[in-house]
Length: 71
Image (cartoon, rainbow, N blue to C red; front, side):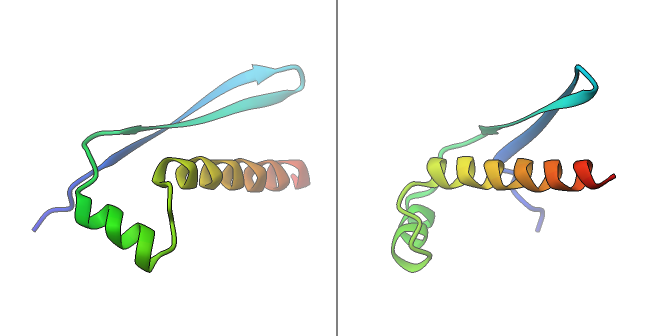
């Protein structure tokens, strides 16, 4: 059985001075089934899926910045 895509992630890279501006974004491709929302909320302790995705993006961008600055 194939994987059902629910979220589309995108990255935009643009010159910014001597560096690069990275913009990460996402698009929810379909409504999240209620059973998944319940699992997220009560078993995984994720009360707000959207806020969790935004926090994850911020973490990814911070890690990317640290790695780029080391190079």
